[in-house]
Image 1 (tube, rainbow, N blue to C red):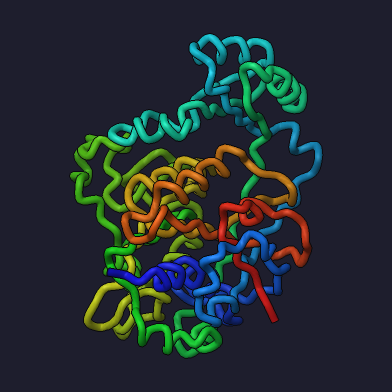
Image 2 (tube, rainbow, N blue to C red; image 1 turned 60 degrees about the vertical axis):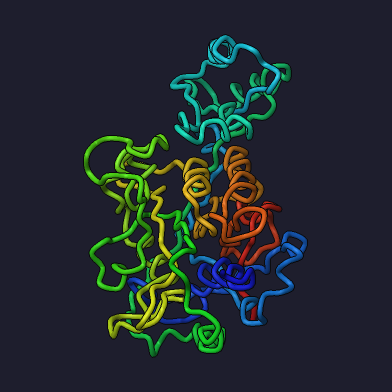
Length: 384
């Protein structure tokens, strides 16, 4: 059995070490980053006192900063949750759509297949997303005024990724030395029965350093166009591309997801490329990488659905190297999905649920950068 300290090792290190080195990399090398503000200490779980000292030498994402203006907020997607007491959600949605001029209203989470009962218990079926034919601010006020129908409503904030470096040499992966990783590897190099969900841009499945440590959905027959395991997704053999709506093409916009996957579980000890943080050894595999694409080729989205999928399919850790472009904003459906993962994730490898890790931001400020600021997330940031 994997010790609980090892799970925290996977949760914090695999996500955070990506920004300690000053070199660059394709699948597993770290990017040069300016130091970010420290994470809010009150959000760190009490169990983290058991994490080795090296786990606190962490650093957050290098961002492609695209500052959102106040005017941009008026054009974005709206997310809202119906009250649990509503007996007829269809009638409520129709009324809200008419009064708030909503278009394209749909559930955030589709039918969960064999997980639907669990989704219903958590209230995931009550989340809806929509756009508006008028001002978003006006529609939002109307939704928020219907307190008997709507429990919460918010504008979906824009999300951003980290910058992508390129340097495949282990000798320049100085974060491993900074974190005393060789001492950690003496305890464990990773275990295949620990699944880490990489919620990002997907992955290059042909990368020579990302071939061994891949999660496989044993209940799915690849490429037959059928949802064999009845989880609501077709052909999700290695994960799912929520941004583009496909299980067969997981590589989305750029190679940032391959970068993050390499940080977590690049094949270690194979004489190729770099060493992953939990990539195993010459004789044994590392953690299993589940690839969940939210920055796709045709769009960006599916963040809440990706977290729910990760929990349902047995991930112990959800690694998120992304955040919103402005402080103080959040998507409540994503925060609810974090709660769901923390409660129902873990895959039997952690007591009481999964561990959700987020980059704190690279803005050198003490503002509230979500989702990392959320109390349900383990936030990582840089320290001197």
